[in-house]
Image 1 (cartoon, rainbow, N blue to C red):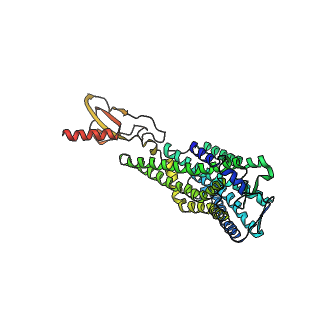
Image 2: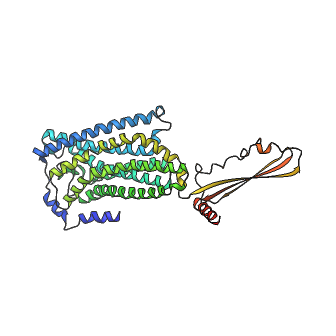
Image 3: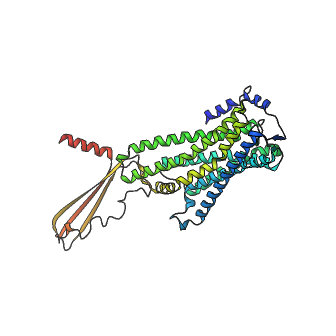
Length: 425
């Protein structure tokens, strides 16, 4: 984050491109749309309209499934944290699509006019939507990383508070320019649509660019770390129980599904963000470049809907299993459980059969796991050796002592002992 801050500050250094950008851009009450500019606005608006329709459709579908989940699922879909994060990402995509759909209004008029409600709303929705979508993509990466490292999801109450806090933060950075400049917050920018003036460099940097680039580079770093971490775990999978191997494979698939969302965000948002940063340096790419970049940004909603539609079935199954399996929690400690039963009989006479059972458990574990991941032998021991077991049927008056030893040792130690035994033999 420190490196990113220095990088962005260097682009706004005094004596650099900031003053040039101000000289190239001039305030206008009205900008005419002709030729290719108008055509690009029409294309941008149509793409945004498709994104709006697809996001509204998927949001309606998910809302219906949230309410009537009993008809389709064993557990409430609203408790699936991955789906909830994607739902909120779609809400931001919808606002972003509405912002770029206003381009159809400007194209129909043949000009962009400052001071209208359409200009004000377009600037506000861009200011909220662009960094908002990035922050939710980053939150998906952080959530996935938490599951990979801790083997479980956040408690649901804490998760809900985090989502609410993120929305509050997104709205704050969206409304800060309004609090500072009022009705003059959003003007006709160098891209021909309404947004913050290039004169408001600090608001553009810290209220917009910083969070977009943090989301882009932050997700890349997080997912790279997760892939390395999971690859190391998978390389150790031969030493794990089968249940742990399956848990790792499911978790690996969830990470692959989740990494598609930041890839879509980076591809769709980077051209526009790079163009704006170039304008801040005084080297504006031109109206055509911004038009194409705006079309890509408007496509974000449709792309996220397509990704969820294609991965929904597998995501629901794998995320449900990977976050309920507790075998994954202890995959760093490869343990193998051995059970040895020894029966010692004596000739001491008794009136009737007396059965004594002694259970000695030797667990050499570094730490105790969660309740769900505890040993399957922690229940009642009354039926470990049944009272009508065949080995006891012929001893009417004999006292029999059964010793069951359960040793829990690292696999590496067991393998070393077996290797030593073979060599000595």
